[in-house]
Length: 340
Image (cartoon, rainbow, N blue to C red):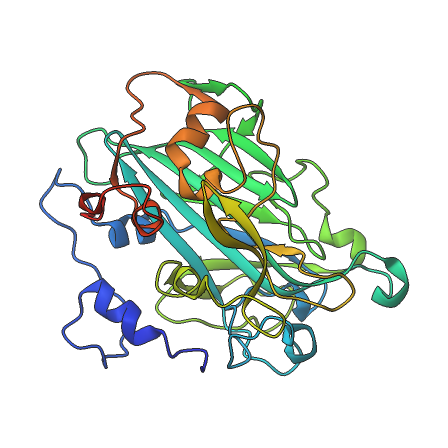
């Protein structure tokens, strides 16, 4: 399956008149104060991505950048594949909040040293952020918390003092460019943080590299170099791309590494063989510290439960979903939770 073969489905979901139309998504806001659609929300809050870059191995792209959905040929196909920029996204809605999830895919996770001797490289990389937005009677609500994933650790950032730490400590204050949260991505290992200097965030200057800045735009483009500060990306929904392939599991397939989530079998990783096996977790398969309440998969599949455990929110915080197609598909919610 070619890289753009899922775009007709994306277009249909976005409501354009015909599945064959290839023009970029343009959304028309509803009446003032009316809740935005999920696609409008995803675009409104699409992150500004400051990607540390030493080489084109640090460029974000689609998981099928090489024209197929095979996971374990991505390392060798990285030099010749299409590195146009895509960001995967999902929106889940509870009675009180929207949970916007964005995932960045890199075909290679690598080291500054030779991968054959460093022991730190692996095929495929998929790290993510989750933005929690409070419904407040306006079309787009108010952002309250930003969580970023760097390897196996989740970092919590806040927008105001109405959110505090709980299981997670508050790492810092998130920043916005307009209404778009700004995130910082490591070169090499691609961990994501809410501001420079968090955790092990590497300053690319130390490695004679640069910074590629990605923003949502009208088309997916590849950077012109490691210091290109004006690169546009497009959004690709997780549900009709990655999620619908969740049964494509095994060597030479899309995913691998099955695990059990509330009695249901799901793949925890993108299939990968080079240097280290099956190291890139799926959005629903992240292995992060879960404490005594959460399990693997909750951060993506049950975000209201996860965020309420991770952080303290002033005011109403409902864990009852209005829209969560993933738990519906797994038989863990009734089908009326598909009305997004």
